[in-house]
Image: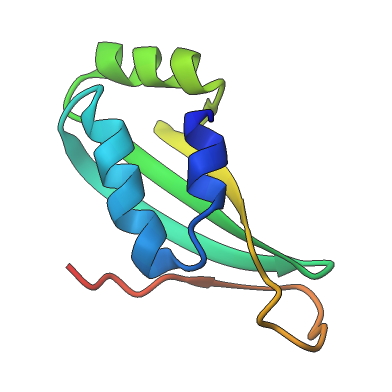
Length: 100
């Protein structure tokens, strides 16, 4: 199972955040991790903005996961299970609460 596939198994931000820390920690020390959740056409997505302690390590992470960079940060988009949501409330987004 690929690393991104494993992240898609996370049902919420509370489980996604430590999973991202563990995954990214294999490449270097996580300096920053921000997660924006969004709902688009009944698909909940987590847009994860990540910084490691070293740009070369970030490059290795991006190459390994097949992800890119936006505004200087590594960006990982994870489709999450939104089956718990019954109604489509249209497009929306919010920053996930930082519980650390």
